[in-house]
Length: 96
Image 1 (cartoon, helix red, strand yellow):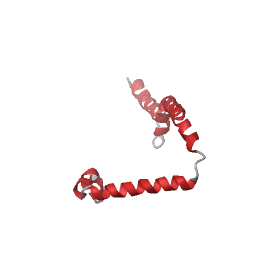
Image 2: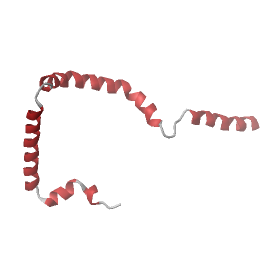
Image 3: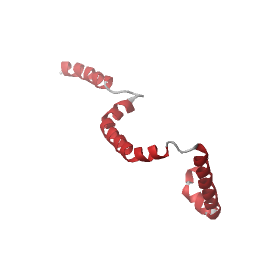
Image 4: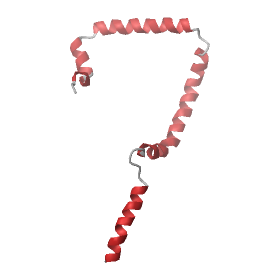
């Protein structure tokens, strides 16, 4: 019985050696690597042609479109009541 008690802490130490305290996410990420790679390949397949189409677009045109999107969002912000905005992001009213 004394022998089994002395072996138990050694086994626990071995188990703890295989666990990382701060970099555990690296081991967890390795498990999902294959799935992430599949998703990345799918996104490249779908988005690739769109990227190639707009790759040579002049910066001024992109800046113009960006400005129009900004104007639209500002107009939307003016039309959305303040009370509903407060309900959308309750963490902004939280003080630390």
